[in-house]
Image 1 (cartoon, rainbow, N blue to C red):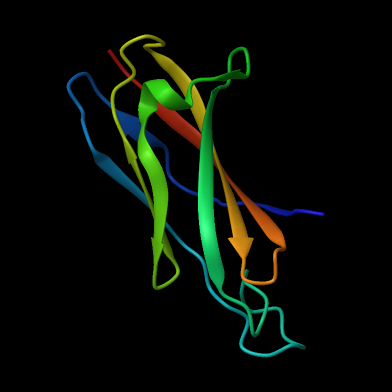
Image 2 (cartoon, rainbow, N blue to C red):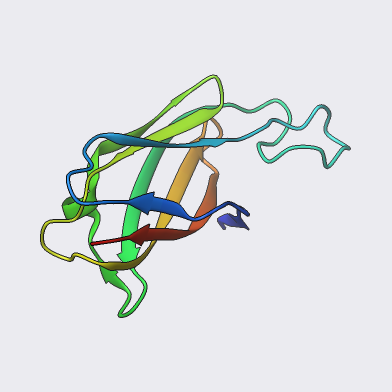
Length: 118
């Protein structure tokens, strides 16, 4: 089962001409097996990260129109590069990140609002 977490963030904005704009999410590791002070379980590490972007008005998967490549992870910072959407245009979007741990377990992070302007 995938544990899900919605991060609270300011609105991430994209404007015409934007290209390779990094959106970064830092995930912390719990300091022990009994604490609740992080997102990644104690004693585990990130093996891989995948992502999808959805247009909120109709929940359409628009990943290939906005996301450049795949998300990457380094030192518990997940970076996703975004481009201005040439096909889907102005609107509200959401990024869903799926983190696979070295144990095979998965965690989900929802970045609730990417706003695309004219």
